[in-house]
Image 1 (cartoon, rainbow, N blue to C red):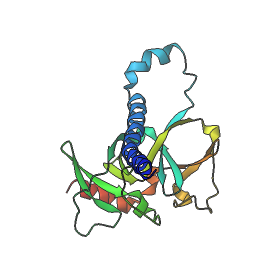
Image 2 (cartoon, helix red, strand yellow; image 1 turned 180 degrees about the horizontal axis):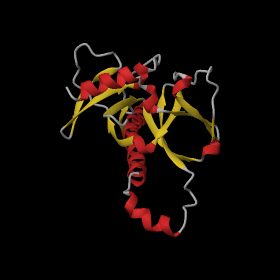
Image 3 (cartoon, rainbow, N blue to C red; image 1 turned 135 degrees about the vertical axis):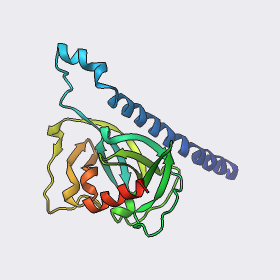
Image 4 (spheres, helix red, strand yellow; image 1 turned 90 degrees about the horizontal axis):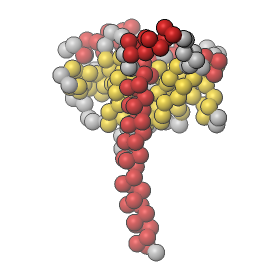
Length: 206
């Protein structure tokens, strides 16, 4: 019976990266669909308004025990975590930079930024490449989950005096209940202060 147990453990370990890759592939498909050029759909919009116009799509991911969602239009791609090049005298949450097809991209660990109790690196750890307007950053998270479509009425406001997971309420757009799931909808741009955005921009441009 011992060899059966060893075989099961080996199979489980091998299946974990594959599952992570499937989640990333599914999320990237949704990102590509969301980022399709507006001109592709302009003729359809001219004929009739879309019945799902009020829906917004969010990429969901995990930080510790909590699940978060960010506007999928902010997401450029999802990458497996690779150790970035460390920069001297940078804050702890800026892990370094990577060369993304000729562009220098700062890598921020959201778990460190939000003071999560643990920030380990596993096969599920991924980097979400985000467009925050002034620059492009990579955000390290524990794992991506899926892409969900939400209408405004599903996103409930949260009292400003209550913390949601590890996120200050000032950075929370609202809370969405999806069956047994509780999703914290995050404003990723507001999460970074103006000084931090300036530092990230400076890092990206050397």
